[in-house]
Length: 213
Image (cartoon, rainbow, N blue to C red; front, top):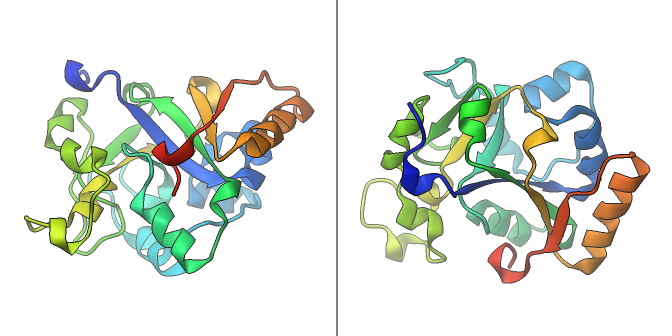
């Protein structure tokens, strides 16, 4: 079924360390399991315990398998996950870039989506029908306010805000709309990587507080 018209102009976001950009230009964005299968190096920006849960969490529709068989994207920008990672000192957000894709990739590639972050217990609900995008809590997706004081239902706002689109195995960069970087220094670094790989430079912008903390 088609994407409901009210969501047709939405974007999807995959954030990663800029050091991963050369590999992405060469191979596309790979799922964790696909990357490991190919033996491709990757700079991790996630908690190990969360990755452990994703490695065994079953995807109950679409191509099946586990979450690590899929490339993760968020409906939201300025993710709570990014904030948590920054607070832990794992990464410096100045080195993080967002790869932005149109929501239509849900129909273009083998994919599923969830109504909450795909690392929680109990697990989120999984869907492979784009018409079911109506189940997403879009108010939570767009809010900048989360935490226990804002939770009114069974699923915390933080988890609903991090609902995901999961693309099976590989997401090519053909549909890449633009790249968002922390500042002009990171923009220039990304542009240089594209030049070095002989790939046409897409729109690359600095995102400010719309994306970063």
